[in-house]
Image (cartoon, rainbow, N blue to C red; front, side, top):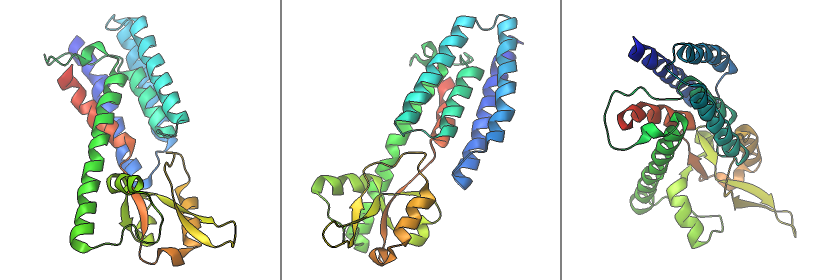
Length: 248
Protein backbone atom coordinates (compact mmCIF):
# COMPACT_ATOMS: atom_id res chain seq x y z
CA UNK A 1 0.00 0.00 0.00
CA UNK A 2 2.80 2.43 0.86
CA UNK A 3 4.60 1.62 -2.39
CA UNK A 4 1.38 2.31 -4.31
CA UNK A 5 0.98 5.67 -2.56
CA UNK A 6 4.52 6.56 -3.62
CA UNK A 7 4.04 5.54 -7.24
CA UNK A 8 0.64 7.17 -7.88
CA UNK A 9 2.03 10.75 -7.66
CA UNK A 10 4.90 9.76 -9.94
CA UNK A 11 2.58 8.28 -12.59
CA UNK A 12 0.26 11.29 -12.29
CA UNK A 13 3.16 13.73 -12.72
CA UNK A 14 4.50 11.82 -15.72
CA UNK A 15 1.02 11.82 -17.29
CA UNK A 16 0.65 15.59 -16.82
CA UNK A 17 4.09 16.25 -18.32
CA UNK A 18 3.34 13.95 -21.26
CA UNK A 19 0.11 15.82 -22.00
CA UNK A 20 1.88 19.19 -21.61
CA UNK A 21 4.67 18.02 -23.96
CA UNK A 22 2.19 17.06 -26.68
CA UNK A 23 0.42 20.40 -26.23
CA UNK A 24 3.76 22.24 -26.37
CA UNK A 25 4.87 20.42 -29.52
CA UNK A 26 1.63 21.30 -31.31
CA UNK A 27 0.97 24.84 -30.06
CA UNK A 28 4.37 25.98 -28.74
CA UNK A 29 2.65 26.89 -25.49
CA UNK A 30 0.89 25.10 -22.64
CA UNK A 31 -2.53 26.20 -21.43
CA UNK A 32 -2.72 27.36 -17.81
CA UNK A 33 -5.69 25.00 -17.44
CA UNK A 34 -3.20 22.11 -17.33
CA UNK A 35 -1.59 23.52 -14.18
CA UNK A 36 -4.89 24.64 -12.64
CA UNK A 37 -5.93 21.00 -12.84
CA UNK A 38 -2.58 19.46 -11.84
CA UNK A 39 -1.42 21.63 -8.93
CA UNK A 40 -4.36 21.02 -6.53
CA UNK A 41 -4.18 17.26 -7.10
CA UNK A 42 -0.43 17.27 -6.63
CA UNK A 43 -0.83 19.24 -3.41
CA UNK A 44 -3.42 16.77 -2.08
CA UNK A 45 -1.14 13.84 -2.89
CA UNK A 46 1.80 15.40 -1.06
CA UNK A 47 -0.32 16.30 1.98
CA UNK A 48 -1.60 12.72 2.07
CA UNK A 49 1.94 11.35 2.10
CA UNK A 50 2.83 13.79 4.89
CA UNK A 51 -0.19 12.65 6.89
CA UNK A 52 0.78 8.97 6.74
CA UNK A 53 4.48 9.74 7.33
CA UNK A 54 5.67 8.70 3.86
CA UNK A 55 7.29 12.13 3.62
CA UNK A 56 8.68 14.63 6.08
CA UNK A 57 8.07 18.38 5.92
CA UNK A 58 11.77 19.17 5.50
CA UNK A 59 12.02 17.06 2.34
CA UNK A 60 9.00 18.81 0.82
CA UNK A 61 10.35 22.29 1.61
CA UNK A 62 13.79 21.44 0.19
CA UNK A 63 12.24 20.07 -3.00
CA UNK A 64 9.95 23.09 -3.43
CA UNK A 65 12.74 25.53 -2.64
CA UNK A 66 15.15 23.96 -5.11
CA UNK A 67 12.51 23.84 -7.86
CA UNK A 68 11.49 27.49 -7.34
CA UNK A 69 15.06 28.79 -7.30
CA UNK A 70 16.06 26.68 -10.31
CA UNK A 71 12.97 27.72 -12.26
CA UNK A 72 13.37 31.42 -11.42
CA UNK A 73 17.06 31.53 -12.37
CA UNK A 74 16.54 29.75 -15.68
CA UNK A 75 13.44 31.80 -16.51
CA UNK A 76 15.21 35.11 -15.82
CA UNK A 77 18.19 33.98 -17.92
CA UNK A 78 15.86 33.17 -20.82
CA UNK A 79 16.48 29.42 -20.96
CA UNK A 80 13.04 28.43 -19.61
CA UNK A 81 9.59 29.66 -20.55
CA UNK A 82 6.72 30.14 -18.14
CA UNK A 83 5.33 26.63 -18.71
CA UNK A 84 8.75 25.09 -18.02
CA UNK A 85 8.93 26.85 -14.65
CA UNK A 86 5.41 25.72 -13.75
CA UNK A 87 6.35 22.16 -14.70
CA UNK A 88 9.51 22.07 -12.61
CA UNK A 89 7.75 23.57 -9.54
CA UNK A 90 4.92 21.07 -10.06
CA UNK A 91 7.46 18.24 -9.93
CA UNK A 92 8.99 19.73 -6.79
CA UNK A 93 5.58 19.80 -5.15
CA UNK A 94 4.18 16.45 -6.24
CA UNK A 95 7.21 14.14 -6.20
CA UNK A 96 9.83 15.38 -3.73
CA UNK A 97 11.26 11.84 -3.71
CA UNK A 98 11.32 8.96 -6.18
CA UNK A 99 9.82 5.55 -5.33
CA UNK A 100 12.76 3.21 -4.64
CA UNK A 101 12.20 0.09 -6.70
CA UNK A 102 15.44 -0.29 -8.58
CA UNK A 103 18.87 -0.64 -6.99
CA UNK A 104 21.38 1.15 -9.18
CA UNK A 105 24.71 2.79 -8.27
CA UNK A 106 24.17 6.24 -9.79
CA UNK A 107 23.02 7.86 -6.55
CA UNK A 108 20.27 10.12 -7.92
CA UNK A 109 18.03 9.07 -5.04
CA UNK A 110 20.08 11.39 -2.81
CA UNK A 111 19.03 14.39 -4.93
CA UNK A 112 15.68 16.19 -5.07
CA UNK A 113 13.77 14.82 -8.05
CA UNK A 114 13.78 18.20 -9.80
CA UNK A 115 17.58 18.31 -9.74
CA UNK A 116 17.84 14.81 -11.17
CA UNK A 117 15.34 15.73 -13.91
CA UNK A 118 17.24 18.95 -14.61
CA UNK A 119 20.60 17.17 -14.97
CA UNK A 120 19.26 14.39 -17.19
CA UNK A 121 17.16 16.74 -19.37
CA UNK A 122 20.20 19.01 -19.84
CA UNK A 123 22.31 16.05 -21.02
CA UNK A 124 19.54 14.97 -23.41
CA UNK A 125 19.22 18.49 -24.83
CA UNK A 126 22.98 18.58 -25.52
CA UNK A 127 22.67 15.47 -27.71
CA UNK A 128 20.19 17.27 -30.01
CA UNK A 129 22.86 19.53 -31.66
CA UNK A 130 24.71 16.44 -32.92
CA UNK A 131 21.75 15.49 -35.10
CA UNK A 132 21.57 19.06 -36.43
CA UNK A 133 25.29 18.94 -37.25
CA UNK A 134 24.85 15.66 -39.15
CA UNK A 135 21.99 17.07 -41.25
CA UNK A 136 23.94 20.25 -42.01
CA UNK A 137 27.00 18.31 -43.16
CA UNK A 138 24.78 16.34 -45.51
CA UNK A 139 23.27 19.56 -46.90
CA UNK A 140 26.65 21.25 -47.37
CA UNK A 141 28.63 18.33 -48.77
CA UNK A 142 25.99 16.47 -50.79
CA UNK A 143 23.18 18.90 -51.57
CA UNK A 144 25.50 21.96 -51.78
CA UNK A 145 23.04 24.12 -49.83
CA UNK A 146 24.26 27.78 -49.67
CA UNK A 147 23.82 27.92 -45.90
CA UNK A 148 26.07 30.90 -45.22
CA UNK A 149 25.57 32.96 -48.39
CA UNK A 150 24.39 36.56 -47.95
CA UNK A 151 25.35 36.98 -44.28
CA UNK A 152 28.71 37.99 -42.78
CA UNK A 153 29.93 35.38 -40.32
CA UNK A 154 33.21 34.53 -38.62
CA UNK A 155 34.56 30.99 -38.70
CA UNK A 156 33.53 30.51 -35.05
CA UNK A 157 29.97 31.64 -35.85
CA UNK A 158 29.77 29.24 -38.79
CA UNK A 159 30.88 26.31 -36.64
CA UNK A 160 28.33 27.28 -33.98
CA UNK A 161 25.54 27.45 -36.56
CA UNK A 162 26.43 24.00 -37.88
CA UNK A 163 25.42 22.61 -34.49
CA UNK A 164 22.45 24.89 -33.76
CA UNK A 165 20.72 26.04 -36.96
CA UNK A 166 19.26 24.80 -40.22
CA UNK A 167 18.84 26.56 -43.55
CA UNK A 168 15.10 26.54 -44.29
CA UNK A 169 12.49 28.50 -46.21
CA UNK A 170 10.41 31.29 -44.66
CA UNK A 171 7.38 29.05 -45.16
CA UNK A 172 8.93 26.39 -42.92
CA UNK A 173 9.75 29.04 -40.34
CA UNK A 174 6.05 29.97 -40.23
CA UNK A 175 5.30 26.61 -38.64
CA UNK A 176 6.83 28.10 -35.44
CA UNK A 177 8.79 24.90 -34.90
CA UNK A 178 11.98 26.89 -35.30
CA UNK A 179 13.56 29.85 -33.56
CA UNK A 180 15.01 32.39 -36.04
CA UNK A 181 18.80 32.43 -35.85
CA UNK A 182 19.04 35.78 -37.59
CA UNK A 183 17.30 39.13 -37.85
CA UNK A 184 17.33 42.22 -40.05
CA UNK A 185 19.08 45.49 -39.15
CA UNK A 186 19.26 48.73 -41.11
CA UNK A 187 22.70 50.07 -41.94
CA UNK A 188 23.43 53.46 -40.39
CA UNK A 189 24.91 54.99 -43.54
CA UNK A 190 22.34 54.17 -46.20
CA UNK A 191 19.49 52.49 -44.32
CA UNK A 192 19.78 49.28 -46.33
CA UNK A 193 18.46 46.13 -44.64
CA UNK A 194 21.17 43.64 -43.70
CA UNK A 195 21.03 40.11 -42.31
CA UNK A 196 22.51 39.77 -38.81
CA UNK A 197 23.12 36.70 -36.66
CA UNK A 198 21.06 36.27 -33.49
CA UNK A 199 23.28 34.74 -30.81
CA UNK A 200 20.51 33.93 -28.35
CA UNK A 201 16.71 33.86 -28.42
CA UNK A 202 14.90 33.73 -25.08
CA UNK A 203 12.30 31.02 -24.54
CA UNK A 204 9.56 33.63 -24.04
CA UNK A 205 10.38 35.54 -27.24
CA UNK A 206 7.40 36.37 -29.47
CA UNK A 207 8.25 34.20 -32.47
CA UNK A 208 5.47 35.61 -34.62
CA UNK A 209 6.87 39.13 -34.18
CA UNK A 210 10.34 37.91 -35.21
CA UNK A 211 8.86 36.18 -38.25
CA UNK A 212 6.92 39.29 -39.30
CA UNK A 213 10.15 41.31 -39.22
CA UNK A 214 11.86 38.82 -41.52
CA UNK A 215 8.88 38.73 -43.90
CA UNK A 216 9.04 42.53 -44.24
CA UNK A 217 12.40 41.95 -45.94
CA UNK A 218 11.57 38.70 -47.70
CA UNK A 219 13.80 39.68 -50.63
CA UNK A 220 16.78 38.82 -48.40
CA UNK A 221 15.46 35.33 -47.81
CA UNK A 222 14.46 34.09 -51.25
CA UNK A 223 16.85 31.14 -50.93
CA UNK A 224 16.35 30.52 -47.22
CA UNK A 225 16.82 31.67 -43.65
CA UNK A 226 18.93 30.39 -40.74
CA UNK A 227 16.74 28.99 -37.96
CA UNK A 228 17.19 26.69 -34.98
CA UNK A 229 14.93 23.61 -34.86
CA UNK A 230 13.51 23.34 -31.38
CA UNK A 231 12.26 20.59 -29.12
CA UNK A 232 10.35 22.04 -26.15
CA UNK A 233 12.11 21.72 -22.79
CA UNK A 234 8.93 20.02 -21.57
CA UNK A 235 9.72 17.02 -23.80
CA UNK A 236 13.16 16.64 -22.24
CA UNK A 237 11.59 16.92 -18.77
CA UNK A 238 9.21 14.08 -19.61
CA UNK A 239 11.92 11.78 -20.96
CA UNK A 240 14.19 12.62 -18.01
CA UNK A 241 11.47 11.86 -15.47
CA UNK A 242 10.95 8.48 -17.14
CA UNK A 243 14.66 7.73 -16.72
CA UNK A 244 15.02 8.94 -13.12
CA UNK A 245 13.57 5.81 -11.38
CA UNK A 246 16.19 3.70 -13.15
CA UNK A 247 18.87 5.82 -11.50
CA UNK A 248 17.34 5.93 -8.04
